[in-house]
Image 1: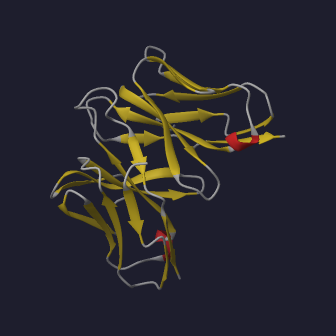
Image 2: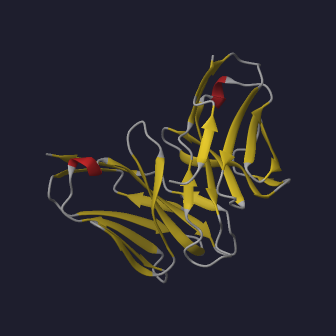
Length: 110
Length: 117
């Protein structure tokens, strides 16, 4: 079993829908990253969070340390949100050891 | 955007030849990483560095070596490339968490696509 599991693996939505991508981890962490990768493109950091919730525009990330679970929400989804979303857990006690989920491929249709 | 560049961006080489990928940063970040990304595997850590001349192995380090003689450069070398090393390689940098909860953000290079024939 992977230490970081994402669900769903693939997600198709209609423009305007509310999107939720989940990330569960089995190790102690000090922080969790959400990353975005467009097809053929580079990787961009969306959030790094260690507790609670963060919001950037239409994107919201939450984390529950006790339940070892994080979610990425996209409100009013748009075709330009189509990308792979990756969560990565920073191991507790480490400044640099990241464990990555395999990603969620999101397709938003107009 | 964080100042991080990778070179070359694309390379085709033959089995058995040496290959060096370069990651250059202008941010003075302490931590640098080399990952490879393959379908079905996601991102996997090859090597990382936590300071000049301080490096350590990641989960898929066999066949790879690294060097960091300056803060700004982190080199990844394939001593004798094999077809299994065909992949997209990403460099990333991070300040780490020592400076506070907002300083651990990751910045990625644009990727280097390596094909070993």
